[in-house]
Image 1 (tube, rainbow, N blue to C red):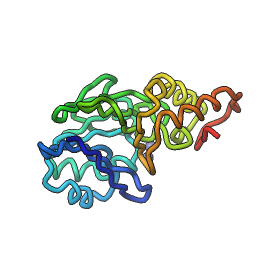
Image 2: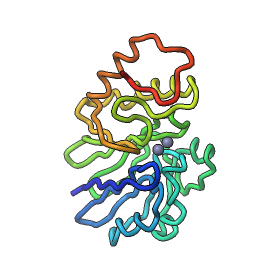
Image 3: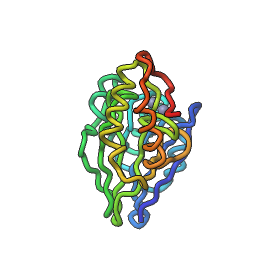
Image 4: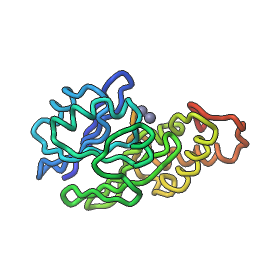
Length: 208
Ligand SMILES: [Zn+2]
Ligand SMILES: [Zn+2]
């Protein structure tokens, strides 16, 4: 059985996720943002050999070095963020890449905007696709922080072509705070997209 565990870490309460195949006691760790020892204690005896990063911001990779060394794990990130944030990766997270975990698998989806190499991770279980980790690409109520109007435009474009093509029932587990669903965000997003946007809009944008 697949379990999705979450533990907020550090100043920004970044959600560190552990996807565990409970029969094998094997897991994949996502976004070790801070508090390395707390993360290692939390992982316990579960075998973790792969670390995936939703993007390269420091609040998502702060404990990366220590956790990677302690576990002897390999690290994957999208090449655009490996370059933008000078993160040494062992493998790339490119669109369509698949990581197996027991009978389940994780599929990489590129969602640029918040950062050029932001990815979402679809969790596909034996009974289908019900949930995904969305990093800082989208939160309940709006897209993740963007630094320029171009980045916001890229975020809206990539969300429209990826996450908002998924079924309404899909649960999205973001990089901070509580989860939401595609249906809830998509309805608000469509209203937002129908309104003219100020040309300089960026930053912490909400759909409402
Ligand atoms: Zn971020
Ligand atoms: Zn973040």
